Image (tube, rainbow, N blue to C red; front, side):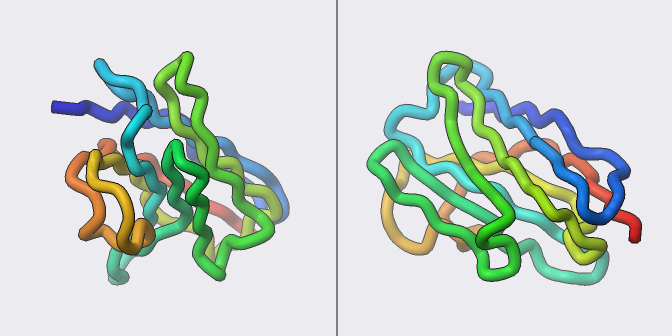
Length: 124
């Protein structure tokens, strides 16, 4: 059983940057597919970025060019770096992991393990 513990987020200004972290409790992210998702009030959870240790990296159109997903396996930590924040980036952000590889990693159905969520609020 993988437990994911998130940190980062908070209240930020438009145009600013954030870095979210997601630490794995016991296992490194080797052989895992990993992702970041977000859910705004009244909306469905959507994929933001995903990656695995075999070179797959995908970004949602809404964040492409502004976001970077990367892993530090020595620290068992997944990161999401976002620059040029916009008010529409306001949401609860979740990290996710799963041993299943392939498929659409921007889909919530690709993941069985989830972090607790962290709020990101961007004001103009």
